[in-house]
Length: 590
Ligand code: ASP
Image 1 (spheres, helix red, strand yellow):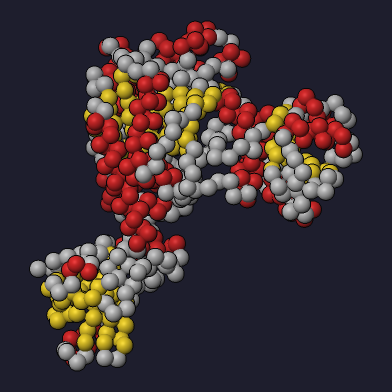
Image 2: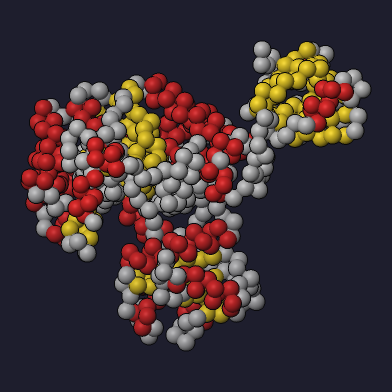
């Protein structure tokens, strides 16, 4: 028998028992007459003691144990004379009388402790060692629990889990597809799904009513800390539902997982119109843990001779509390430069400091006297010690830039507390986005999203300007400035769907070739339906107050999309290419 107990289990009540433990050697310490070994498994660490006097040979063996050796030890549970209050098992130790080395181990390339000295690359390459560390184990176990609680909730609410295929058809649904060559169909390719969108809609046509799936999705996009080429969604669809029923169901799911996994009771989620979110926060995923809301300044800052403001579509600002005296000219210069980096691209940054001594320092003193600037303060609710920051330019760009500044100031002022959770629904997104470059509309959510009922007619017959302003029955769940998920009520009428494809620039033939199956299905009794998908990895991260999703994925890819452990992607040999009918193509392309 390898073990009677785990390494995290034994307590004072077990003193005197004969036990057997198995695990990995965390550390072996030779203290002369006694040798102490910390034995670790995923449940905890238990101290083993070897006594030279009682059994010299055994003690010798123990002294030679290297880090990460796998051993089985048997002995008696003993009360420790010096207890370790930081460990659950810290009151006891095992006086070992038998030890078996099950497997030796090379010295690991980094320390396997709470905090490791290993860099990212080496930890990715030896992922199995990194995964032995407490923090990662905690995350992976958390993920498992989140999946189980999600299934429980959805099952209790009548959802059916259905698997949809991984080898599907390539469609231009937003991101780039990963494609897979088909050996049996020379020259043809499958694509890995960006989401099971069309399949779940087909399931509604098929009468399945409430579908869910915890499912891998694949998008060939540039990567960031919160993006992976393959990621997991909690994907759902419901038939015969209104938007508010969908929202209520998934608000319920969110509350359920916060309650069961974090013991946090979330209050009801507010709903905010997309337009309002953009106006108040410059973002469709506002972090509403803190205020610092936008104040539009056109009415009182234009027409005073400051041409930068006068020639702008929008002048808008925020008020940062209590930093006027703390931020030197140099700090302001650095902040301005930060705003001017290409990632943000602001032309400049106007500020007005209301100093504690009542004086005012500003970059626009030439154009606005103190009295005028004081009147600005009343619009912003600014007091002594506060700073107003203002940007101006085209509406969308300026809002986006100010959003970056707002988030940065929120972080600097410690207003983005990771233990506070502020969820909200953002609703009524635009249906279509006009892209100047390609001179065509893109679907803001995806091509299957329905317009708001009141906009249906306008969609069928409206002119360009009208089309730009159509609203979709689409919604996102946002928590702490992170988009947790999004969805929409779908089009379920063939005509309207065809019209949407048409607006998105598909010819009839293209629409038929790519989505004929869905259009066809809509002719055989498609019920009204709608759904949503949550980013599962992101939900894990947000629930734990962190940004990176990587630590919640057992085997993630790095920023180049590589799996460092198995070293993928990798070349395949010519024979394999030949079989896939790709060798010839490659040669032709050279
Ligand atoms: N399929 C959508 C997505 O992946 C979600 C949805 O509309 O249900 O974003």
